[in-house]
Image 1: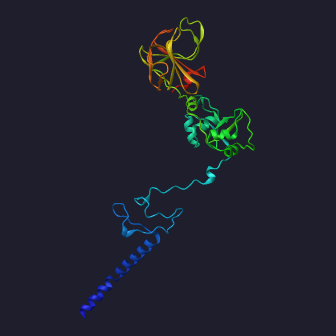
Image 2: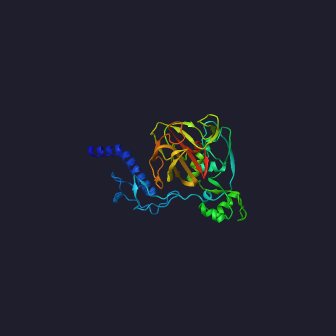
Image 3: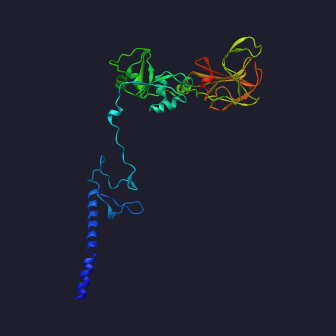
Length: 333
């Protein structure tokens, strides 16, 4: 009788613990069956004993994950993304807001602030040189990326669309064109288009590197002759003073079109570049390239000297655009 009382007492004592354990087990089984939780072995792989069929489980906004899908740490690394909603990429009418430049503004920061690329800001505001932009200047900010194109004689919307890899429909919608007729010399906005590299570098003043280390002894433009200090003359380039023998380097990659000697520039080299640019390097003591050679940006082409008409050792650096001299300073990094 005493032994029966002891067993009854033990059951009463542990009864609530057993009930709670059964409740936890039941809750666990229900969660397992409802959510399709997968368990992974310590090595990260799925074991045969704990695979859960996800074929019939549809997650929020996604499809079922096949059992053979590569999984690491419970995350599918090869799941495809969700397509962009059609209305996000559909062409839309061009509109503008305005922005007034403040101290510290540069073209890159302004473009980033409005989620646009630099080409868009430059083209929309017909910027010729970003270094000349000033505090207080008001810029037009388009609501989309793209550049302006000046229509040429013989152009059609189709030919322009093909050139910039867009569609006639996109150009028509953005510019609110109601026919395929376009007028020469008019400007139309090409959505998504970019400027070519040469034009962008030219506008940003990053087209050429300095041909040698030194200091400017004479700028581009009108000056008094260094030989009599009386005669007013036009100086077609930039004079950079440097010690005799200092390396002279190609300001941009290109083909050496001419080497030679004349009374003005002494030993000189001319290099032809992209987009109608040529550079001339004068007064060299030594020429280190031959006509016809291709040179990379920064490649040594000669040494500083004082040949020809020179008051001391320097390199005369001239930049031509389509056969006409331009100020090198506006194009140099």
